[in-house]
Length: 206
Image (cartoon, rainbow, N blue to C red; front, top):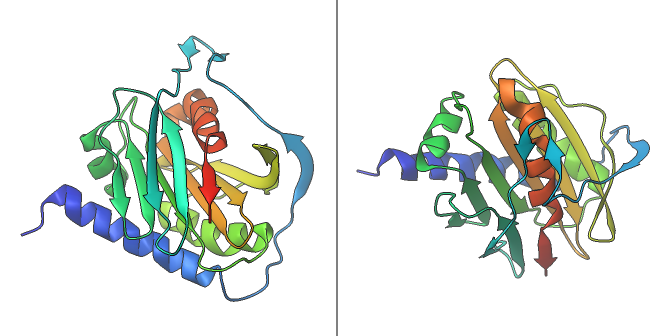
């Protein structure tokens, strides 16, 4: 029998691939704010929380022909890769608690994957992030322009009844990468800068 952690990963891969498949179909009507924002972060502080340095690096296949690479803090759980997805979490318990929508204090959970063709970044946000956020009970803000490593991406965020969510689209030449970062609803504002910093560290080689 698959253990809980493995079953959780398979469920989340399925959910992530499902919303990314949808992202390849229709055109979008997503409204995009032109407010340019970026937070590059390793040494920034938010309230009394000092952002940790992103000293660890992991790479994973996008399930097609490309590779997604991202940085994250030391001391986190071992990343899960495979199936076209990349999963990061502060502890093994966080991966289980995310599935149950019961993230605890200090727990972060991140999922990253690529679309299987090249819709616009607005389409990717609309047809990937909306179903995902709905599944989590989160209403996302209007997407806004977001600079990531010199490329023009999008971001949106929201806090639901149980979790907070940051969604970021990182465009590539042929496809886009979608990033979902989650915390408990009470700690989203505290950890949002860290989620942004991790999203900004993504590189995508197709």
